[in-house]
Amino acid sequence: MANLLSLLFLLLLSLFDVSEPAVFSSLDCGATESSVDGNGIPWLSDVGYIQNGEIRVVPNAGSVSLVMSTLRVFSTRKKNCYLFTVDTGDQLLVRASFYYGNYDKKSSPPTFDLQFDANHWATVVTSIDQVVVYEVIYIANGTEISVCVAQTLPNQLPFISAIEVRSLDSSMYNQVDANYALFQRSRVAFGATSIVRFPDDAYDRIWVPAVVSNGLTAIASDTSIMNADVPDKPPIPVLQNAVTPAESSSSIILLTNLPSTPIPIYITMYFAEMSQLDPTANRSFEIYADNQQTSAPIIPQYQVATEFTFTNSTASSNTTIALVATSDSTLPPIISAMEVYVVGPLSNGTDGNDVQALVSLQNAFAMLQEWSGDPCLPATFTWDWVACSSDNSPRITALYLNGLGLVGTLPDFSTLDALQTIDAHNNSLNGSIPDFLGSLPNLKELNLADNDFSGPIPSSISNNNNIKLEISGNPNLCVSGKPCTTSNTGTSPRTSSGTSTGGASTGKKSSNLPVILGSTIPSFLIFWAIVGLLVITHQRRKSAAIAAISTGGLGKPNGPPQPMPTGFAAHMNGHSTNNDIKVEIAEQIGSEFADLMEEQAQAENNNTNA
Image 1 (cartoon, rainbow, N blue to C red):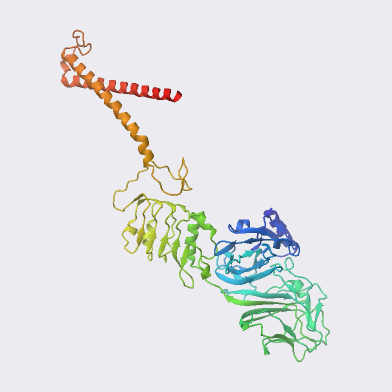
Image 2 (image 1 turned 120 degrees about the horizontal axis):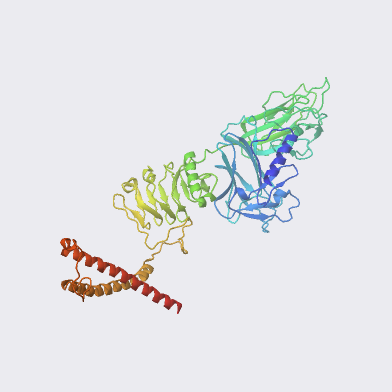
């Protein structure tokens, strides 16, 4: 089904003559199957993207789109993350949507944190009946990005309804350094009568119609031809509408939806003439911020877009941004669309080598794959089984793997050279203790107790006085430099699940010694009783045989001496005679012992049948 949706989506892109974005992912969180919305956007279920969380259905969701009718809510973990594969250096638009809709019948919309990669994104304040949307634009610094929600208040569980990831052209929004992100505050289409998005906008930006008021008039273009080849690539439909004051001397005051505190901003505006002006008419205006001119005169063109970007400065909700006609203009200002962003720094994230080492642990132990996103950042939302330094690019300083049910051998994570503590006790780790553990330069504590390690302890560990080592509960370990013997008597081989073949396991190490003793002692006594009986019997026969020899009746003890074959007597001596006796006795013992064992087995079989 997902492949069919992708084919339909590619067909739709070809119809609108746009190139396929490198990434165009849409997740319907909580949905159990794929769908296509009214804009032709294919939506996938989030089931394959996350292991945690519970699916909930919003009741009476008729007023919102089908995508908003389901959600996924999280009651465990510090943070829960969705992962997306991208290309390093991709410029991305990431959008997260939330619709509470009283899904839990508590009429209590929660508040929680939204994060991407290692960064705090926003504090999500949900509404009981409104869709809340957050959007960020930034350049990916790796091949994987994450979108996470995190609980911050008691009894207010984070949830999410939808996630969208879109690739943008590398030339777009490039006046912002790659170490910064653009957090959207508004994106409006002046004069439009409905929302503009994909397929009209190939990058699926959502342009919301502006409310026309304060003496403004909406006007539409008299042509369908429009050259929109400007840096941030606005869609043509938003350039075919505009607002302008009714009076030529009036200005346009722009609302920015900025916070009350001054912050760095990125504002881009788009202009175009809606009709061919009379030769005597002239439209020219400038942009002012708090009565300070910030632009040269702007003269919009017919059928051609003009873009102006306002950046490298700070602004707030108290900042007045106005379009003011120049003194020689015969027409008032005009504007078609505007985008407003807050500029914020990007975190470097946890040290890259450390992250790769954690990935090797996750690949070795499926249990650890439930954690995703940045391991250390934001700082209050680290993974449950790691501790981190406070560096700008944090290092992993501890692994707390105890009691997580890990089964198998430890992979190589020697690049975690900032580790001070490794606690992996009470698991089912097996094989030899890796030598690299003793070479970790900052390691102080190594607890490998209550596992199934075997073989010698590496000298790099046993000779390292800086490491406090705990290895009790590993019966097959031996001290390096001493003979190392392993006994498997009475134990069953372990399976990959940590249980013993042929029986159930309680998860604790137990002894089979009582069973061994109970089964071997009776057999031991019976065996030696039989041997004793045979020895006594054959001792008597041996005496009789010797007596027969002394009377010359070896072959026939009660008869006359028998002549020997020619040549035999010349070589016969006492030694060869004794050897013949020993052979005969040994053969008789073996034969009679076999007869006795057969008789015992037959008796036991008769008792069983009885």
